[in-house]
Amino acid sequence: MIRNTLLISAALTFLVLVTGLAQADPDIAGLWAFRCEEDRISGDPFPLEEFTTALFMMGSAISGACTGETPEPWNGMITGRFDGSSLDLEVLLIQRPLTFARMSGISNNSGTIAGTFVCSDETGAGWKGTFSASITSPETSLYEPASAEPFYFVPTISGGISDFEEETMATPVEEGPKKRELQVISYTRDTIYARPVM
Image (cartoon, rainbow, N blue to C red; front, top):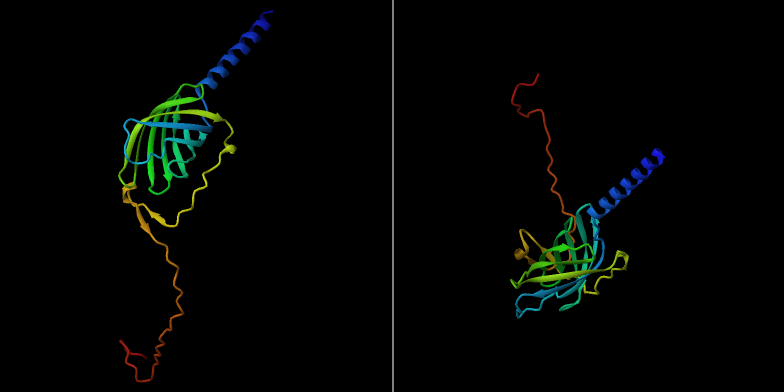
């Protein structure tokens, strides 16, 4: 009887421990729908009004892809960290003008995240406000990028987002083989050496 009681209490302790560990390390991987609201309305079109992300987690590190339709279809990349319930994301929108956003929020472990953001683009336009996000599916394979046109220029970033410059791609020029000049050196009996030859 005592033996069964010990086994039952050990099993219950194991279940409580496993349940506690599962709740301590939530996973936010999946498809998320984000909605951002500006604090004040600016004249510039706001690209992060509504967008979809596919988030992947490795430990506390987050990476992923995002897509939106405002003002034109765009794709982007996401990196960040998720510790407990605190979320920090950096979002890079790959579009003209190049746009960067920083988002900080809190998850309530029920599939929703809420927080604040700041955003700016290479032209100097900026936005700040609040955001909310909800998980739409735990399956990231359902993510579809926007059908945006590819870049026809090469972005050159030297120190920051404001250093963006456009360089047009030129076709390489084919050069023919260069002729080498051949110099013939010959030695005779009368050649003078630096030291006597014996």
